[in-house]
Each structure stands twice: as structure tokens, then as C-alpha cells.
Image 1 (cartoon, chains in turn green, blue):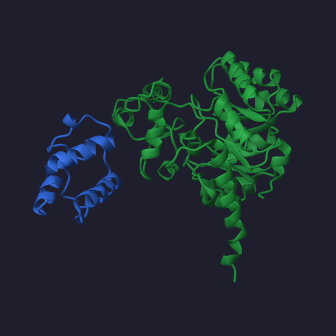
Image 2 (spheres, chains in turn cyan, blue; image 1 turned 180 degrees about the vertical axis):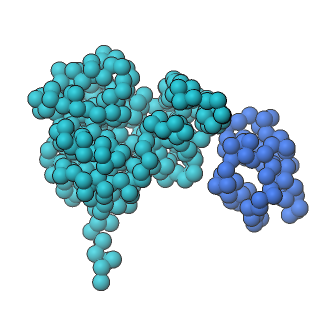
Image 3 (cartoon, chains in turn green, brown; image 1 turned 30 degrees about the vertical axis):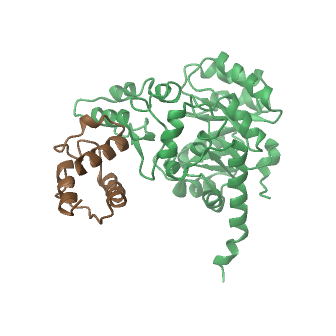
Length: 316
Length: 73
């Protein structure tokens, strides 16, 4: 059995967190992951707090187990979301796209376990200094908004830089990648893309199919030219149009920021995987089958456990 | 026949209407980089039972079709 101090801290069986994916990680998916022994995460995304409260209620009707909420700090509704997680008694908050420092005092007072997503050593140090309980070091293999470093390079450097536990994210989809992440110093992992195709995930079927059909080189990054807005998504008409405009001489950073507006919703909710943005990680090519979330969590952990048990084979 | 198959394969890969892909289409204009071209060649090898090598002069759909036709496909 994989043992991690953080499992006890969070009251979960398997050291697996589900990624907070906007328009995808809703109360139903989070509940399914938590019921499977991992930690489900509801994405608060850019919505208003009412949406989040509704998703929390849905999750609570489906599971008695703990689950968390991902708050995107750039959201115009971040303040309301930060208050909602306290009022709703959510035990775990993961944060992305910014520094959670302004909410830390209120969250710590409420006993919330805070796990910021970081993509560099400096942001890891800042988050640790602000009082984070653990960090999620996310490499650029991930889908969605990403930094520059790969999981392989980022995780050990973050582990060396902070005293608190580190979780690895980005490029993890099976027991092999989980075992590698643990060997890099992470105490547990976060998976997004693999859980996106869980049976309980309500993302549009066209979106799931696009991930299931993907190969190793199906993803591309958009928004890299001006920095700060880099996104990994599956190549389609949207990315071809985006990249053509992004690299035109007269294009400004603001033009690029506006190019993606509404595109994720178009793909994830409306199923327009041609003109919409299909965020997914580099491991999409390894994800070939829809299955229940609980089975995914169990399979990944069981395979990881077996591999770690055999790792003595490399030492003579 | 070969041209139709190649265009259909590309249309599916790129999720584009097949009419937008002509023999004059350059791979670079279709947004295909060298890795995409290698993947496409592997898929064509499987489809046609041939061995194809990436070649810097093969930059258009028409050139690829011509290569396959030369191989008697």
C-alpha cells in the first residue's frame, strides 16, 4: 500500500489528486475521484460563487469523503470564491494563476489545507513562505496553462527548495509516471488528462474522443510568444488559426490574450472540437480508454506500488 | 485513388474539410511540422504496406502522392 503522510492529513486512501480543470472538473467528477479513494477537485474557474456552491452541493450528495476546490486567482470572482470555500467548509484548496497570499490568513484560520500550483522554484518559495501546507509542482507536460519547466526538471528543484511536501503534476497518467514522480521527491501526484476521460466526467464526448484519439505529438502550445499565457492543447483548426495570428508581425500581447476567449467552453461544453480549444496534456497519447474514476486511481496506484517494490532490481 | 486516401487521412488528422486539402497544399501551410509528417508517413506505411522515408523535397501533398504512385500504389 502506498503510504504518504499527506493521505492522513487529507483523510484519503490513495495519494492521487485530480486536477482542477475549468469547465471539466465539476462536482460529479470530484465526487467520483473522492469515492475512488483519491482527492477530487472542483474547478471554481471564472464562474461566480453561486456556481461553486452548487457544485459543492452536488459533490456532497454523491460522497461523504473529502474533496477540494481549485481557485484560479486571476478570476474576477476570486474574492467571492475565497470566501465561499470558507463558508462551505471545504477542507482543501488548490490555487493556480497567481499568489494566494492575500487569502492565506482566512483559509488557515478556517483549517483549510492550501496547496498552490507552482511552476518554478521562486514561486514555490513564495508560496511556502506564505504558509502553504504543500505544493503542486506542475511541469509543462500538463494540459492548460503551463510554465516552461518539465516535471522531470521542476519537481526535484522544488523539493530541494522547500521544507513542505511537494506533489508532482504534468505528464503523469500511469503507475510508471507516478513511480517516477515519487522518485523525484514528490509525495503524491495530481492527474488531469487521465481523469478527463473518466466515465463520470461530464465534458462533451467530442472532447473526450479527441483525447482518446490523440498521439504523442498531438498537443501544441499556444500563447508562448509573449509569455505568461502559454496553454497546452490538442492541435486542431483553433490552434492553427491561433498560431498563425500569434506570430504575425503586428500582433500584440493583448491580441493574443483575446484570441482564446470562450474557446475552452466551446470545446468542453458545446463539443466544438474544431474551432474550440481542447486543453489536454502530453500524455493524451497514452490515454486510450474511458473507465470509472475509481478504477483509474486504483490502477495507477497499484502499478506504481508494484514498480517501486521492484526498484531494487537496478541496484547490484 | 492514392490522392483521395492521402487527402482523407490528412483531413481526419487535421479535422479539416477534405476539399480544403489539394495536391498543391504545402505541409507547412497545413500546420504540419516534421514530427507530424513523420507520424503521417508511418500511418501511410501501414495503410499501403510500403516503406517511406522523410525527404526534404517532399513538401506538398502532390509530391507525397507522386512518391506513393511511383511505388506502384
